Image (cartoon, rainbow, N blue to C red):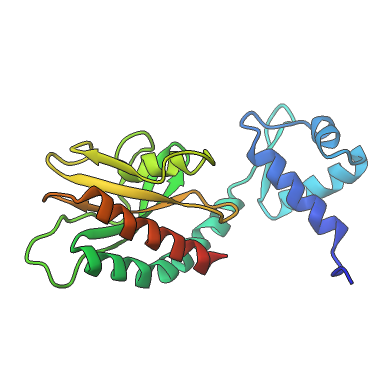
Length: 211
């Protein structure tokens, strides 16, 4: 027997989903057409979401995603870090390199969690909160790979973020709403095939924990 659902909540979530994909915002009429829902109903949904700062209306009456969504999103980051910590610890200690979880934040890659290996004398320092363009560095490029279902399994770069540093990262696939990669960074030689095996396994492990 199908689970009971709330039609109003479903419609409200659909409003947010449609607005998230519309950079210039939408009018109530445009939203109504996109959702195939009566304009009056959409107006009430928008008014309710606006009261919670989840949407906002500009001076032209166009509706945009509101700053309240950022507060909800920020609450997800500690959960991601907690779930990623044991995966990154296992990866860092297995390969002797600094391991990281990186997520897409607009057009940038954001280092959300970093774990350094516990047994090596020297390793690359990588700061939580570091940002760089998605098209630069293995972590960002792996996130872009995750947008294409038939893309390569991992990305490898040399010296794109730090001189001499080599990075390898794999996308975290199959988790709705998450664009992320798991990767490693090192200054030494990198056995690409072996490292890719460990990194891909860690990315799959994290995806399973998040599913």
